[in-house]
Length: 308
Ligand code: ADP
Ligand code: MG
Image (tube, rainbow, N blue to C red; front, top):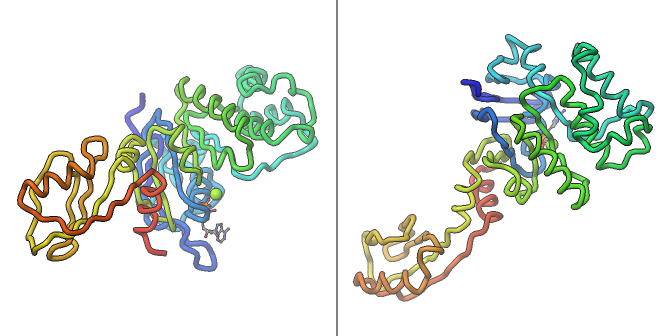
């Protein structure tokens, strides 16, 4: 494994002509070998980030390294280190999948004896369509062909921009199996999605962007742990400077002289047990409201913390 991250961003910023700030000082390392999810609602800046790495969009400021290569200083090496599957299904309808891959290999200067066109088509389950016209392919097949196309130069990093947008559930599962297979064979995978469950099911680590800013970057498990938290807001009978530390309580926030928001691990503690402990510690609880968080809430909560 390499000693540099697969992708290293420092204060990456993009302001489009017209003034739209699509990326705002993104600092992020994507580890080599990761299966990484870049999650965010539509318009968050995901494609802009990917397109800067792919050399399709020029950044305004900050730095980006791909596989240790700075995109300004070593653009060719940086470009050779990634394969990008674009969000849009752009195709030349007159080429067969076989021809499409051969052409792409030519563009990347892959010598004939190093090409693996049929092996790639097999990997994406398109061997039987090798010589069919691209326009006769279904949406899912086109997406798979684009994955193969992004892999012709055997890059260590594969980036998929919204790979399952417009792909039906069944094909989605096939695609995920394919992506997992590529990852298992050592490819670093980065995928963008606005589907929480997709990132959750597929990715080991998730970064969340919103309004061009990074709002979270954590192992999926840690984000899920946040979703296992439950919050109760309690009102006590009298003013209290603080609450005692109790097992199972993650955080206590003082909302007012006698109002507290208590966040606890709902697997460790029930609301009843929590209130029982407060009472045992000498606090009389006069009112309680509870709120359940799921991953959707965590996501929305993180996203809301960043104003537009
Ligand atoms: P995402 O992929 O997360 O949906 P994008 O990177 O496509 O987000 O877009 C981020 C923001 O930048 C959006 O507000 C979008 O409208 C804007 N944007 C994208 N491309 C351009 C462009 N070529 N010119 C101006 N604004 C753009
Ligand atoms: Mg996009």
